[in-house]
Amino acid sequence: MELIPLKIPAGYAITYNKFYDVEPIRNKDEDDFIENWGYFTEDLLQIVKMKIQKGNWYVPEREDKLLFDLGWYPDSDINGQYVLQLVDENWYEIKSISSRDRLIIKETLEAWMEEHQRL
Image (tube, rainbow, N blue to C red; front, side, top):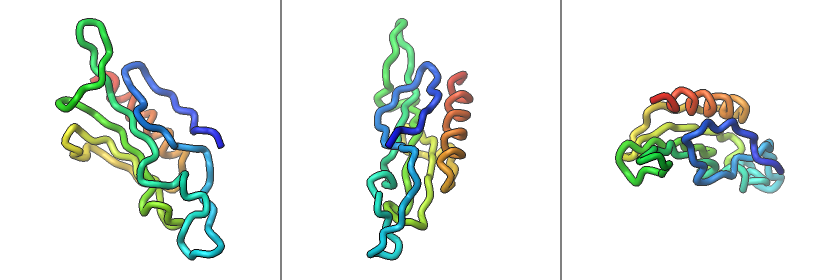
């Protein structure tokens, strides 16, 4: 399996990535469980917007932190979908999108990063 190729603008750090280019496969023995469940969990991708201080990039500890978070909900469920969220340091949701189509999620993520790069 290959990771989904992402266009990451300058100023972002990938802190976790298990966002693979793969389709869910229904488990033959259990009704709603995904056979390849490891690719469809609540923790698939996290990207943090970095800051510059004195000419050096750093990942903010708390304040002014923006985090892009991607997961599959419900976890390992064939009826689930990707949920992409942009949240702040208090995990307050700024915006979100849900879709079963990983390409829609990819395009949305790239657009959000581009949009917030300028802020």
